[in-house]
Each structure stands twice: as C-alpha cells, then as structure tokens.
Image (tube, rainbow, N blue to C red):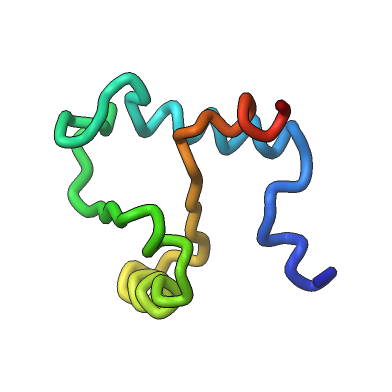
Length: 88
C-alpha cells in the first residue's frame, strides 16, 4: 500500500488545495441540469455515482487519460459535504 500513498490526499493542507480547485471550477450552488461550471468547458464527463465507484470505470479513466495525455485524474464527492461527513 505504501507505493499507492501518493494517490490519496494525505493532509488537511492538501485537501484544502483540492477543495479550492473544485470551488474554482464548479458552482456548488447549482445542480444538473443547470450550468454547474463557473466557465464553459469544452470537454467533460459526468457519471452515475455507483458506476464511478465500480471496477468498470478504470478502463474508461485509462482511455481518457491516454487520449487527453493527462497524467492525473481527480475524482471527488461534492455531496455529502466531505468535511461535514468525515469529521462527524
């Protein structure tokens, strides 16, 4: 597992960094089908929560990362609020 530690958020500071990134991209007061992005995006993908946590998503992430030449893939849960949920 030690080899995979870099794949996970490890500190509150790192969590706040990614939370800020999400806040800059998404208007969390909006819900689909409203415009949830703060700026127009040319390419995006939304998936059902259950599918996004299944084994079936990994090939899709790999293919998208190859096509876009992205080295990182950020996934997160907006609801329930992660700070309220995990700190309870």
